[in-house]
Image: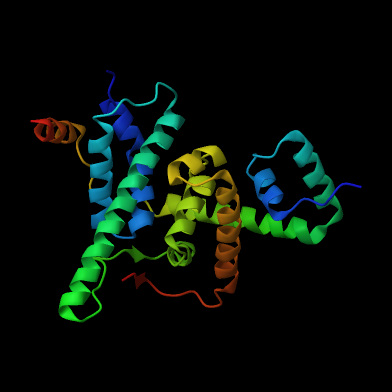
Length: 78
Length: 169
């Protein structure tokens, strides 16, 4: 019998970082464990919520002009 | 030596600004941080790869600058506290106004957690890139991410009543 995946495996799987063997193990485990599935779904929802919130709250900062930056670099070098 | 182009700078700007803003949680400090990051980047050789790795490279520079700045700031605060006998406040009076509840909860997470969640869940960096950017071992990426997601989830679930617009001090 194979060991159940640990929490790190679940995160890696969710982020597409798990190798084929781990992925298969995680998917088998999730199919049999609704609680773990709910946990992973929760993390996924949080991440999506965070992404959406960040897209909606646009960053309103001053944007430095590339020319200004290059001039600054040249001045620093002198 | 091929340098960052204006187009590349413009393209990466929103990402750098977002990372800087959520590291510092202060618009002024974020602007300064982005500027010093790009000034550093302009005297170096960028990776000859795609836009994604260019972004990861710039995140790395920005994060180092942030850490250096924090060290200096803490030393300065210690000195100030020593001489005045009072606990010195970290940042300028200007603070970040957050209307969105999710972001308000996110803002209360420790800096390390904000950084890793932003890089993985928002920017879509690989664990390897995150390890390089934050200068931590791959194992730490895993455990930190795991703790960060757990805490964020508790905060997002735990918020019973939506809070009004607030300012971070």
